[in-house]
Image (cartoon, rainbow, N blue to C red; front, side, top):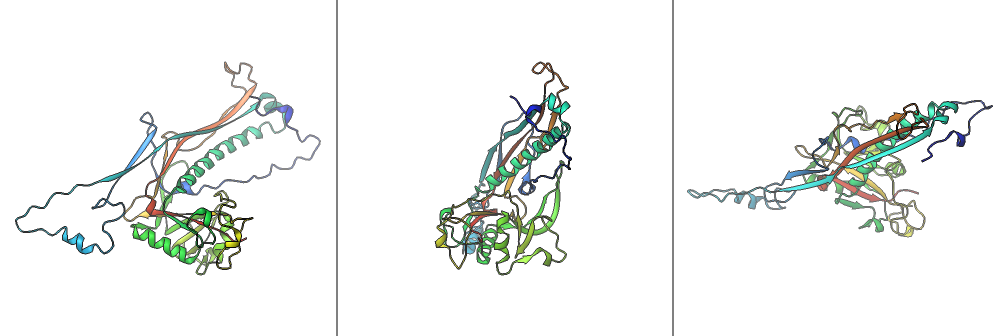
Length: 356
């Protein structure tokens, strides 16, 4: 394992040394939502949630449409007759903790002879922590895309037939579907930082999507830009672009899309000019809600003691049996993470096209 070597790193000798330029940064969003339950050590690798079902045993439903009279009749008691006892039922969800990590190495010559021998290990530390934080974000993103409460742009009925952009009617349908399953808006999210805690936010349904979607949302009738919110606090001061009713639109270039996964470009509906080559590029929109009276649409589980991501630095000066001459330094980071959709009906995923 060679790692980063002095011999392969060109220096800036006999050159004016400009400042080290800023690099692209990741942005964590999805990991600020959902329940956060640090998992105790030395118990198991699997966590299982349980949710009691309403009377009747149908998830998210107390009575069928038009079933109000039947519901009342089941609760009417006859004189002198003891009613038959009922029982309760529940559903469970489980997920498995996964260990994630990364490792950098560099030589003692690079550390002690290269002009950036101090800065390179520091950058390794920054990038190791950033990589794992981004990995956790992408793990949550992948889990949320497994939600079964799905909507499609245009006349599409699957990802492969998406042929239109998001519309006001689509979001009205999403709102109706969420409310019909006793879901409500998000009014709190996790604070940033190593110590878990909640902070209050304005009640809304956050919608997370790729930055390519900005123009498309601005073209929707009824869309309100952030500068027109008045005194309403933003869910994300950097990347929130506006609102559509109670939906707040937040963009992130890391929330990847599926190039050419939709219908043929020529099948686009409503005068829409989609982005894509032969086929329309398909973009997931992640819509997050909560249960009325509490409860989260999804959950996250870090292993206790690994709640925050921090890189460890082992410089070449720390000699050991495997490196008796102190020729190598290492930067390492690892953590444990699990996540699961806990209630598909309290969130939604819409697959849509965007403007060329």
